[in-house]
Structures are given as structure tokens and as C-alpha cells.
Image (tube, rainbow, N blue to C red; front, side):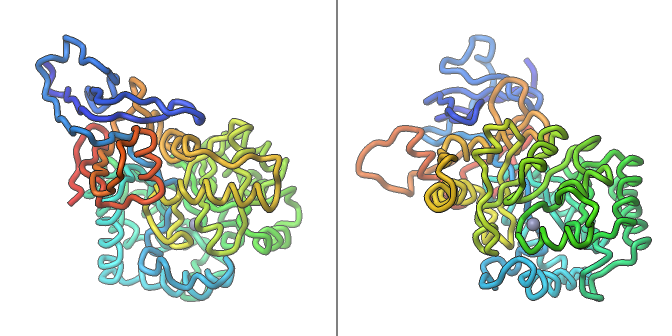
Length: 427
Ligand SMILES: [Zn+2]
């Protein structure tokens, strides 16, 4: 008998495709060597002797994947929501991010972030830190300890940032290399570095060229922002008049998915050419609906992205978004798609709960490999939800129970969480 096999029992629900749930009531989910071996209504005879954890009437879902979140902004989530993006960055973001020069502040702030991520239904995340190398390493230590699997990026900014946060071009490149070397020494199991130019207005052409060289040397993925807000798009056109569209700037420097996995947050105003380029290059889109509402950006044409077969996942985008709870991002994605349909464009139908659940699991999970589903061979990320606190006068089916989780669950419903086949502490 292999010691690496264990089995969970409960109401298993997940998506293989965006338009349908797979449901196995009171079924068995088998993990072998950290991977999903299968989902069974009746446990096959060969697994008879292995340990089964029976979660009774609980729901068992794949772990949620947050493709876009800013750890240093966690402390002001839910605050200062009366501004548009560019003013919001000046007033709220940059003064707070400057504090991460001081490790004692970084430790206090990042510990709250790491603890709450550990208690959430999220098992994977792409995380922005700040420009500060040491504080970024501290965050990576904490994320490694949390048991989650994450990409974490030291931010690059060498223009259009206040003096107290702006790096010299050479300094930004050198610090990035030093940070990568430090990370390699740490030999983390679950925490990986990702290149993180904040967005085009923050990075000179020379810095972009340096980042490409660093990427080629260390084979790193990349995360950034794209076509979030109309003033931002005009600004990019002014800064890079030679570009065909916003994403063309990243592509010009070889930083748009051509030879590295790339995730771009927002894409609210991506036009035909930008969509086409993202499709050609396999760029992932992190749809962040709450943030897009809070900083008055707009509503991304997500149905279009799905129809085109683009990679689309969800991002909480704290602190543009107010919560790391990715179920809330699913609900916001449905709600904002309905407003878009009603107010802007009736050619794109609103999103369904199946579609947003797919985006928050398998859609975004693909950035991490075979992640976000219970199909055989997928990495074993699972969350057990106990919804008994949320009373109802009639018995509800499994799909309805999951839909209620999307709209009003919080970390009180999380009974257990597994990442790559290891149970992690959610207390
Ligand atoms: Zn962001």
C-alpha cells in the first residue's frame, strides 16, 4: 500500500468546461502523490484499505485561484474608495507602499495578509509586493509558511512615481537580479518569483529592455496591468506614441506572453487588435470586477474573452477590491456582466455561476499548470465547505448550495483546505 494515497468523502462539485458543473453527491475524491487520481460514486476495490476522511454533507470544491492581488494594499482595503484609478494611486497606494521600506512595518502588515489568505478558500495566487527587495522576501517567507502556492513579484517603477518610491533604472534592474538570487537560495517549495513591472506608465523603455534580459536569463513569468482605465490608456499612448495599442508596448519589449507565461490584470478596454494579440500569445487575463467598479474603470467584455477561447481567471485586486474572498469576485463578475448587458452592449449575455466558478478555479488555475479541477492528473487543491450555518427551510441541491457560497459565504464556511495534497492549517 502506498502511503501517499488518501481519500476525501463529501459532495464533490467542480467544472471541466465553463458551462457545466460536474457533481458527485456523497462521492469519493482520491489523492495519490499530491495529484487527483479520480472522483468516484463507489470507491474502487483497490482503494479499500486507504484512509477516508468523511466530511459528511459538506461540499468539496477545487481550491480557488486569485490571479491578481496586491499584498501591501491589504491594510487599506475598504478605504478611500471615492477616487478614480490614477488619483487613487497617488493618494492611497504610493504613500502606503512607501512604508514597506521598513521591515517592522512590512512584517506587521504582511502577517495580517498571509494569515487571512491562509484562512480563505484561495489555494493559489499571483501577488504584487512593492519595489522593496527585503520586504518582498519577507512576504515570500510568510507565503511559503502559509502552505499556499504563489507567485510573488518585487515591483519595478522608474518613472511617474513619487520620489520616495521611484527607483533609478539601473537600481531597479540590479535589485531585481539580487532579489531573484536571494529567492533561488531560499529553495522554496511553493513560492515562486514573477517579474512585476507595475504598468507601462511606471517603467521606462530602458527598464523594460533590462527586464526582458532578466527574464531570458532566469525564465520567469510576468504579471502587470493592461487597459484598465481610459485616462491610463491615453497616457500610455502619449508615453509610447509608436505603439499600436497598450498591450503592443509590452509585446514590443518581448514581455507579452511570447516566450513566458504572462498575466495581465483588467483588460476592460482591450480592442480587437489587443484581443487578437493576447490570443496569439496565450496571455492570461485576470478579470477584477470589484476593483473595476471601485476605481470607476468600467466593465470588461468577459463573455467575448470566453467566446474567443482566451485564458480568463479572476482577481480580487485588493485594495482596488475590498476583499480577498474570491467567491465575492465570482458574484461581482456575474453582477457586473448583467449591468454591462443592460447598459452597454446586449450582444454579450451576462455570465452564469458555472462560468464564474470555472474562471475562479480551472480558468485561472491553468496559469499554474494542471490546477483548478478534479480531473485525473490535476494537482490536488481542495477546499471543504460546511454551509450548515446558513439555514434554509427546504433541502437544497448541491449546485444551489454552491451558488449560495458564491453570494454570501466567508471564511466561517471553510472546514478544511488542501494544497498539492497537503492539508494546511486554516485556524
Ligand atoms: Zn492591480
